Length: 305
Image 1 (tube, helix red, strand yellow):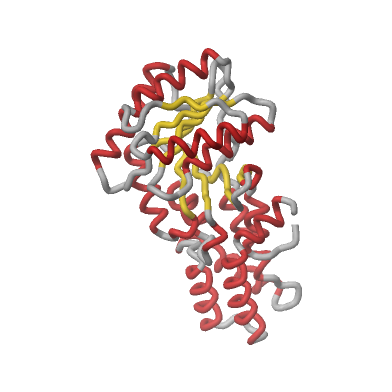
Image 2 (cartoon, helix red, strand yellow):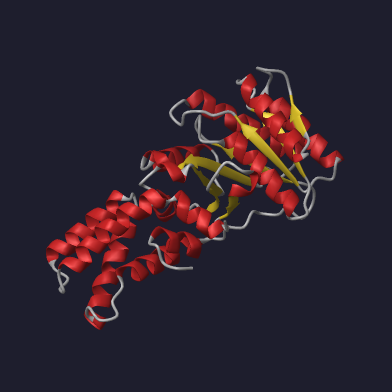
């Protein structure tokens, strides 16, 4: 199964709900009425596309209907085009630091899949011909350290770890030393999950990043917020609060297969201007891939790729 098919499968609950509602609305009447516009708006908002994106799609739908009428008029293609346009405004490639390792810090609340994402990103880099090191900086959970070590063994990626409850900033410091010694192209730092409302833990994250910057000026070069796609609008609140504490450079969206609100991907980038860089569509190492706006938009509205 290709990645586009995996993507379609992962967001099938969102797509099914949207398709059913849109099809019902547009086939009921040959005219675009005030009621049908309101129902279309409700369907788009129900998928967590957000008000700005929904308004953009509605405006494009009205314009299309006025210029084309019912003949040749396709709401799905119009919606996909507008979503792609919105998601294509920011670069999605992982930053590559020209001198020394590119340091990528993975942050987020508990349970979003940061540890797994760190390992999958390391695997992706190795598949692209790079070399990676993993840092187990979630020292509050012994299980997280062991999980990352298991991933490291499975993918043949070195893991730098300390003892349980050791200072995460110290582990990060040692990981940069190791990455430099190995001439690694990338260092992925798995940080502890922390609620965005817990100021002391958020401040600790700031400390980890300060230590990284002192050891390697300019690092971390990427700070990726890992979000559970099924958390809907709460994901926006998380992104907003993390962005206040540390400069987020991108988003990784996981667990979209468990939600009918996959449109939150669009909503977050549209509201906060933080690009989605990777998207997870399964449990296997290859199931985390660079985000492609066109593929996502077409899958969301079931437009053939």
